[in-house]
Image 1 (cartoon, one colour):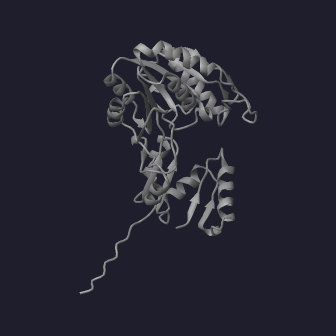
Image 2 (cartoon, one colour; image 1 turned 180 degrees about the vertical axis):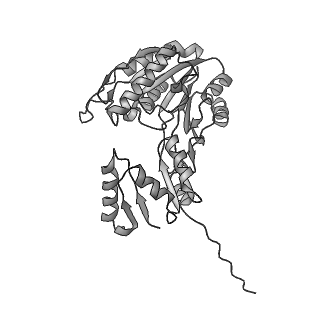
Image 3 (tube, one colour; image 1 turned 135 degrees about the horizontal axis):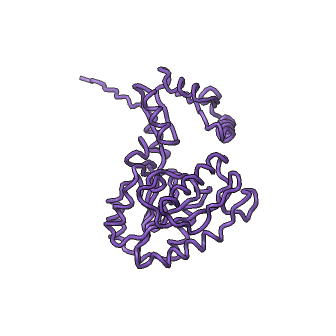
Length: 304
């Protein structure tokens, strides 16, 4: 089947270059076409009867609007997450700190499976917090074309301003700022909070920014309860040397994938990638995306 590829208006060249590479590799030009336009165009494409499937990656509100407009056609959606990473007392400490920092701030936090909430067992909490904040402060935020830059700008100044406002809301509600929260245009410095009230939207919604919330817990049951509070869930992570504890957490945490002794943002393309609750519809990943986009047909032969 032919494909219409509609990129974000903020990132058109990634789609254009992808299609150019596919055509150069031998794919017929008529098989895939890049289309550009506004919400009116997208609404028309989604509602068109000739379009038999819509695959969407983006925010929940837009996904919900697409579902309303699409009618009776197949949908596949990746709508974001609010990933928890659980750090147990018996973890490999240095590995946990390094993994959580990397998992939180890669791509300036603009990662749907990036670590947004790091839950640390009480006995380890202060030591972990101090090491995590220290490592975060050592990250260099700036021009992504400089080799020594660790965290570059966000996709737009508007998004950075929205992040700044969400963090301000959390601080006003009682969260404590440990580092960061400086903005220079679209560059938002890596930010760490603790004591964030669970009533804050930052705790429940996807922030998609270089912002992390730290919180202590006493028991695994408490950690799992905290991990499962948001309605958006793609990946989670847990650091522990006890495999039984890790597997229990993996079984009970509501997520499409649980990474053991790694950050929530570990992923390779062959995985069945998706989430639970409002995180996604269907699964991505090479074979799994292929199956999502395939209509099976049964052919029976009566040889009697």
